[in-house]
Image (cartoon, rainbow, N blue to C red; front, side, top):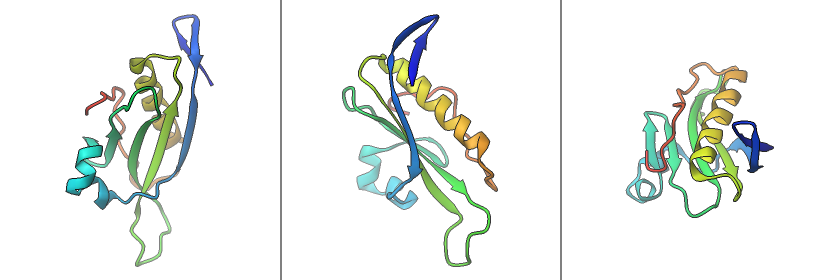
Length: 120
């Protein structure tokens, strides 16, 4: 999608969302805490590594899960693109994640902050 700063297109970004292969327990582990930062109690961000993808994982309580399956499933949001600046890409990641969460029917939607610092 095109990324705008004011009325000007500043570049393009790719935005994806998927169920994460990473578990929420991995985010809080000593190894995970070196890579991931907690932005909110159930929201984690991966600090930017150069102009690569910016990543956010949020726990989403899904209705209708079976007894032995945890209801808080990790949903992964990615935004990547070299042309828009870091600040704009963080803003796009936050807006993208909040818009997807708003459209989904979660039992307890995660709170995704409007500002996501690179080292939350």
